[in-house]
Length: 333
Image (cartoon, helix red, strand yellow):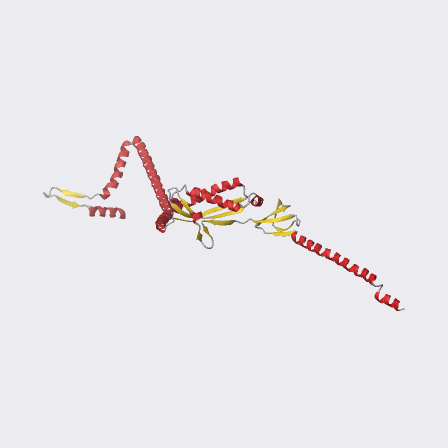
């Protein structure tokens, strides 16, 4: 009885206890295999999606080979097989001859020799953007570095074609355009996936302060000349319309005067033709009529005198009052 009780309470000794303890490690092993699987699935889920901004390219590679360029927004990729390389679409830039922030001059980039063998410090600001992200990432190891070396090469080559006056004062725009054209053509040949958008001269000055003062005086004089020319053009634009209006008025008056004289001459010619026709028909009567008409025009303005020679002394009696009275009497009648 005691042996039976002991068997039920404690089991069949070591054999029973060994079988019961062997089941728990097997379950733990199964649970341990699930933990890495869960971590793997979680990482795969996070690695399957990515977000792309509007101003970005995304080059997708499959087993290291570029396959697609995705659009902006939330996108899916195959985890652990595909990778995403983001490239900015916006315009990027770098300085040549100085460093932004500290304004530190870099003589190895800025010091150059002009056509007339003068030294000059020229600083440039270069702007570019990526046009083909695949070529940008895979056609060269350092496309921006290549662009920088091309800029330095063509800048020195172009500056050497101009004299120092043009570089510092009057020829900056032409120099910039010349350099840009050369670099753009070279980038098309190199096929780096980069486009040069702009290159500008930030500063150009002689290496010594004394020479700098002389060129500053030249630039000031040039600006004064430009101001004078602009003022003259402004004055011409203001005066020209008024002068044109006056000229138009004078022309109109001259044309009106010409028309009046032509009409007057035509009228006199017609009157002469009429008189000539009358004269041919009635010559004596026409002569008398013309004589009387002429006298009517001439006599009212003449002074009348009566000379009495019988008196021995020449006496002149003006008849103007009598003529006036005669005219008044005829008017009263």
